[in-house]
Image 1: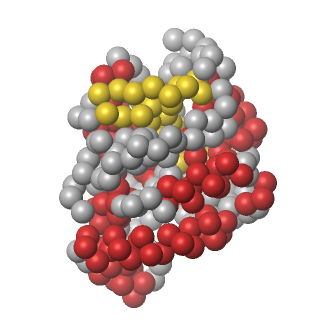
Image 2: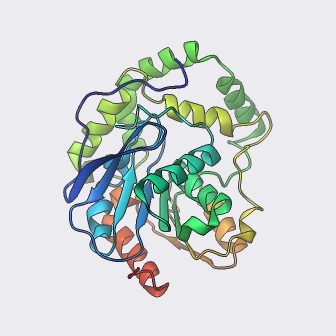
Length: 304
């Protein structure tokens, strides 16, 4: 594989209440927007890793949030319909790319909302470009742990990230045959999700070269003895209003990272949502929309 991800010509899932647009910023991005949008401070929705794209993680959220504000939900570089944009690697690099996208869209300031990998990205966005972030909502956020499991597991994981692309990508393509089972393990009840979302994730995971952008992110994030992307201890300087959302039953990202981060920041709180897994916006869309809406309204972000 080269640094540019695979091309994609197939039509991707566009959730109800959304419309598909494109923008040019170092390549052609797919950006989902609300069909009918309110006048509040715009929301930037940043999806997670693996075979995710904006139409999967934000299947419910785009239409729900657009009632109050413009919504921009891009497929990240190398993902979904943004495969014309070279994969970026680290969360910091992805955040910088998003600033270029916001410039192309002529959007000055956003409520930055990210799930999983996207949570890592939006926290980096706020740290690196604080003038572009009016409020921050990390959901089951990555970037808040010092090590992946115990010392031995972390070392093995790091060694895996050192393997060449020519070894990793065929192995990833082979493992994609179990993608539906892996997706089901990340949520509490896969049968409660829209079947078209599950089917889309499986299709994306089985496309040639799928997961390359996520592989680049992991390669940049995992160090030999600890996580390079751990933001613990750096977030105390962020004064931006912040709402952390996380399930205490999250099977992929431990809630303790969000607890520490919320305690570290001067204007942050954590809402724990029990009974769901890792994909809170998909599993509990009404709770997600309510919490974000109330947070934005309390901060005066319901109007521009």
